[in-house]
Amino acid sequence: MAQNSENSTNQDNFQLTSGGDSSLDLPRLKGTIGPDVVDIRRLYSELGCFTYDPGFVATASCSSELTYIDGEQGILLHRGYPIQQLAANSTFTEVAYLLLNGELPNSSELSNFEGQLSNYSMIHDQLTRLFSGFRRDAHPMAIMVGVVGALSAFYHDSLDINDPQHRMVASYRLIAKMPTIAAMAYKYSIGQPFMYPRNALTYPENFLYMMFGVPTEEFEVSPVLAKAIDRIFILHADHEQNASTSTVRLAGSSGANPFACIAAGIACLWGPAHGGANEAVLAMLEEVGSVNHIPEFIDRAKDRDDPFRLMGFGHRVYKNYDPRAAVLRESAHAVLEELGVRDEPLLELAMELERIALEDEYFVERKLFPNVDFYSGIIFRAMGIPVSMFTVLFALARTVGWIAQWKEMIEDPDQRIGRPRQLYTGPVERNYVAMDQRS
Ligand code: ACO
Image (cartoon, rainbow, N blue to C red; front, side, top):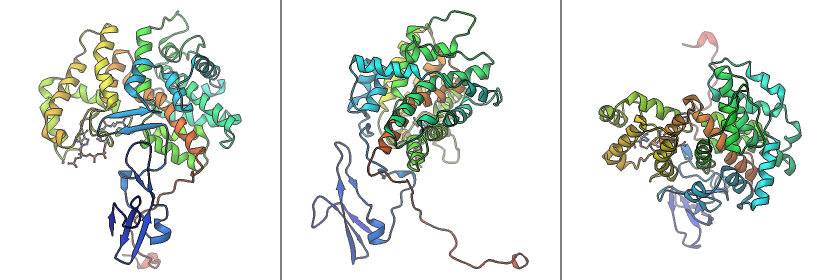
């Protein structure tokens, strides 16, 4: 089967020919920026074949107005705004508003939005008992998958996905409750009492208060820490149709409620090839231990027979420096200094590892650059956040993107249940063999 990029009859379409006699004129869809898309929806009904694209390397699963990535240039835009500008000038709640509503808020819109989030920050008290069913040494991501999914059992008044008011309330609830649930997962693991959210605090302050405060003492939230974590939240807020976002959309396409869909997204994010990489980077850096051992690990990463990969390196879309990693790399030293961490050997090690990898032919040829997870863990660690919480913080921030993408999907008139097809390679039809006749 041959595909030509130009059609002899319609310059704007694609022409797909099969074997010589059958051909199909496939519409070319144009976005505002980025590659054109071949609309293959009529392919099966007209030519009787499917497309084959494991890992969705060349497949646009939807149209979206939220986030744009140019992986070759290392560009990331949310609703058109470059991530560097948002990270430098904005707040996480402002970016959340932008992703959900399409425009930056004015001051009254923002304070109204933040007020709504404050209203929804507590969780149903009965839900707190769910935590005691988990082992104390449970991974916080395991708790997150369970507790976020269980929100559907408590908030029946925001489960009707066809009601815009329900969708909005569910969105606010999820964004507002994630810091509370995340901090509770941590408190549970160390055996400290849960801290209730305080509405006078900002979103990042509130999270730090619930994480590190205890009921017996006053807790002063460090503005440096609050600013640093807010910036990391901004950098993780959304990232187009990545694995966890696609999971949320796929789960949502069946009409599942938003709490269940976000729980599915959290499960997908947990994997080390995705959000779990921030935890894996720290483990790797600790294993490397010293600059002298770097060549040995680089060699392992290049060895096809060794499953080891340089964690925090490589990305499906970025074939250039991940702009989020660039922001974190630049700010890592500054944040550590502000936090009073003078020498962080892991940061020095990470920068040396990056330097050596970026000069190595293997990584250069494959365009493998540091991704967002490469530096985030080092900053989290300096803030006193335990390694097992790294991916939880990613999930907390990404909830904004997940829910905005879910809402966009539900409101899209083209939305149908997501149902990919396959290339079947199993046995053809055969007759059942009785037990006594099997070899
Ligand atoms: N270390 C060593 N080699 C690598 C790495 C790495 N981190 N990443 C990719 N490669 C190599 C592959 O072995 C492959 O080599 P080959 O062409 O000789 O077979 C080539 O680069 C292409 O890699 P693929 O696995 O085909 O790329 P894919 O787009 O499927 O995977 C992924 C992207 C999963 C991110 C991958 O680069 C990886 O596993 N990185 C480490 C984990 C990580 O940091 N994940 C976080 C991603 S960012 C995020 O989720 C926020």
